[in-house]
Image (cartoon, rainbow, N blue to C red; front, side):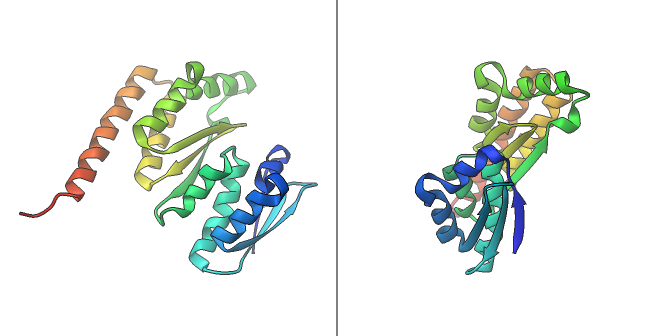
Length: 182
């Protein structure tokens, strides 16, 4: 049994309309969720495939960090899918700096966050003081590197160039992987 704490305002999203989301997570991840709506604690008990059960806490954490349930459930699509959290607060000196850093990661009209998603294929959400990423290990690594560049003060243009270069590398690796002999 594992325990995960999620923010109060995300409990409704985790439960879903009439408990629909909670039931879907329980059936697809083969876990049982016990949600305490008073304090945001969620008990996750595995009751089926242990490998699938390992993804249960990750799905709950992803929803708690701002992902829509459908995006969080993509963690079950592939064994290699992973969820990662980047702590923006750790890179900020104070509250004003935190807001500035969040603004840099989101970009004008959300463009920077969208480009991270488009150029890597990962899902990216900025919620509270964290940035959540769902994708393959390579995708998550590229998004983390881009986010760290932005948090370190790199110009957006150089971060976009980095993302495009990495996208081309991932495309090439994918093509080489699927080449047929002969």
